[in-house]
Amino acid sequence: MIYLPVDSLDVRHNFALEYYLMTEKRPSEPVLMLWSTTPTVMLGKYQTAENELNRPFIAAHHIAAVRRLSGGGTIYSDQGGCQFTLITPNDNNAIDFSSGLNLIMQA
Image (cartoon, rainbow, N blue to C red; front, side):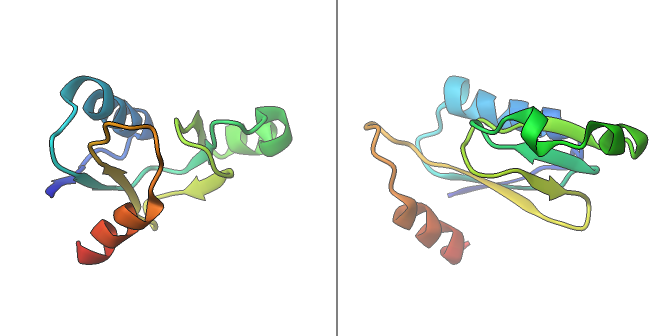
C-alpha cells in the first residue's frame, strides 16, 4: 500500500488529486491518503445543494461548499477532523467495501 500524506488544506486541491490518481495515474496498488481541510461542507454526488446548504450561513462564515465524486450524505469538515481517501486498483465495477475496510484497519 502507498501512504500519501496530503499537506494541502484546500479541499479542491485534494479532490483534484484524488481524481488525478484514479483517472490518470491509476496505481497498481492501493493508495491511502490522509488529509484535512479548512471549513468545508462536502455534498455527496447525489445530494441537492438547495436542500443541504444554508447558503447565507456558509457565505457569512467563509465555509467552502464542494461536491464529492462519491455518494453519501452531506458532511462538514475542518482542520479538527481527518479525512481519508482509499484508492484501490479495480478491473471490474463491483464495489467491495470489506477489502477497503480491511486495508484501512491494517494501516
